[in-house]
Length: 379
Image 1 (cartoon, rainbow, N blue to C red):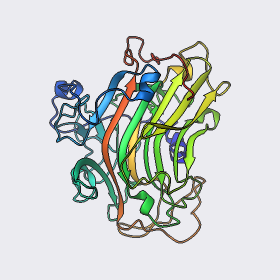
Image 2 (cartoon, rainbow, N blue to C red):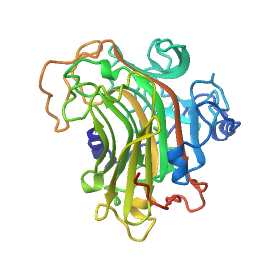
Image 3 (cartoon, rainbow, N blue to C red):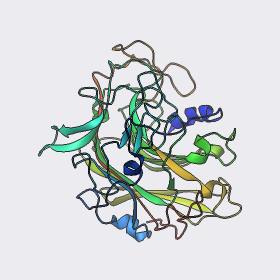
């Protein structure tokens, strides 16, 4: 949560945006063959259906060999890589783009045992394919220690955005929960961010910045954070509520679970968020006026579209070179208390699928408006 707030400072300068990957066939990437159903990409989940979100806006199945046509498809060029010198490795569109829109450097995607690549997860029985997102403590320091991807490109040329009103799900497991105490900013997070404010064509953003955390897991005893949460934040007004805020061993993030954040809005007075684990409701919360710019309806904050970021690594700043321990830097810029923390050897996340469900006109003609306003779901 605080991590993206720190980056809000970066948003006030001309920012960057979105995605690349070498030797890409643009038509194949933007409109992959499909969809076809799979165990991960099938019928809309019941929590999506109750909100009327029966259209699959995105579903990526990493349990099927890539390329695949499951859900909305993953072509061989699904990932836009970053170059060794920073920034996009090509000028093409992709499904996802390596790194995060404000971080120009990530370790190589094909790094053995780490990186961002499809692997066989041998930590489960039976073994299964998954997308590995891994950060190694031996990776070089480049401002942030993380591996990640986003639906936006570093160069600002490409992006894929989605309405506020939607169900965002991820099925994953991670070993961040196994990190030792005083782990500082060791973090795994899938979140959305307001695209109109991210590109920073205006400074400051006139309508505030939404951050919706569909999955946020910290190492035990992280300073200033719960251990696991889903949350809704409107940083233009100074914050927002947790939807779920819990401590281990619940949920057990070392095992595969499906985490979902359902957001609904009436387009003028409220945005409601409800969190689910394995399709079981865990709690709801909301953001209401006067925290929202709500005139006229379906505009201002309510008209924003969201892009996604997903990372594994150390959010907070650090000291020391590759392979050294780090002393994490808190949100106010001061060094965190306690001993230095060495995420040894690093942090892994294994991802089975990511999916987004919304209304039939989720990418409709009134773009960039939020086309999916309707009944607000609170249970």
